[in-house]
Length: 143
Image (cartoon, rainbow, N blue to C red; front, side):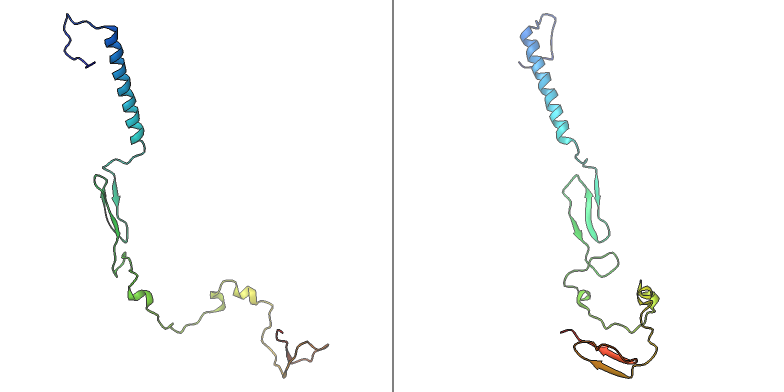
């Protein structure tokens, strides 16, 4: 049935008209529910994507958007794979560190040989002798 919107006084409304009208209303309700489900969780087209540091592009979701790397040498730029800075080997500058600069080094060295005294000789062999001599450094290399 085609829905009528110009009813007059002499028009009759039959039970078949009522059923057809109910079918149309029910179908519209189902269509609205399906549309609502389909749109659930989707971003509104006014939502924008902003390009952060090192990126260009972005904009509202009213159109397709592209984000791209912002290549260059300044702050906030991305270094390309062929950039000479990536393979610019440099000679280290001479510098020193105290043992306190190395985390846990002082504790690891505590109780180790203090470095005082002197060795008067060195003995090397495959097994240690039964008794040692003071001032002799004994070395047994791995076999």
